[in-house]
Image 1 (cartoon, rainbow, N blue to C red):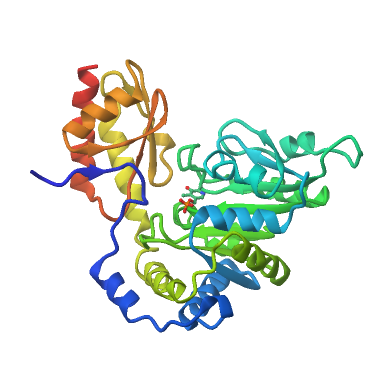
Image 2: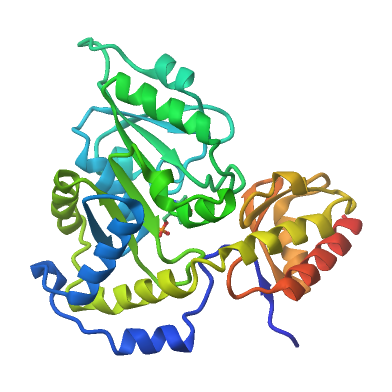
Length: 344
Ligand SMILES: *Cc1c(COP(=O)(O)O)cnc(C)c1O
């Protein structure tokens, strides 16, 4: 029995032996006191990569987004955000529960335009919430791993600034966006007040994210990290060592994941009862529409044949490539899925 091909998410990777060794050898101290040398090194490295004044390690991407947003919000303020965005849809309602913010969801595929932002902005009026932040997600997960168009992004940034709003970037997969568009993370992060990046998605660290931004934002985020329970003391350094290893060894190979995702989509195109558009595959995420039956039925049958997939909706599957699945694996997954489709 061969191991299953696990395409449920890019969070399913296991830390390699070399990464575990780096973790075992990490020099650590109490990060709540700000004394951990490995955490400092990782934060400096991310700040350098993103071109920000400062950065702060946090245990999860959810915490990274939430404390970054919280740092620029007061209770009752409003956040403008794209349809299906992680901060709004997959963070357990934290924006409402913990930041006390209301959200206004705009656009149709996760991206939106400056015109959308202008239309959603509320005037300074005691009857209305104060619109304070525009949140962008790049790449956009539920949009199918799509990379923002650069001109459109520049327009959104300029509009938000004109209206006096702060900008947050959920860059959980900013590394993928940079590789796919042949640019740097620094360029894609320019203009944002806060940026969150994940070390535990395609980069393959077992946990850890970083919030980056100006000194004032990071200082405020630091207080919220403690408030939200994210001060990890000596544990942070061990996880930060994995993050440093991941940045050094697993960032440039992300293009392989993108090529595998495209090969998977191309092999699957035309399969009965399934619809996939390979030309929409820009990074490591492939969305597959189920034209007969449900996602759940396809997922169960594929699982029986050793292929694991996720559901984006009742009739849409999500497949994600990562460093623990190779070209043979994705081609095997495409064959299995085509057979499942034929039997629907
Ligand atoms: C995974 C992810 C996060 C963070 O999730 P955690 O599971 O909390 O690390 C944030 N944004 C996006 C777009 C993601 O895909």
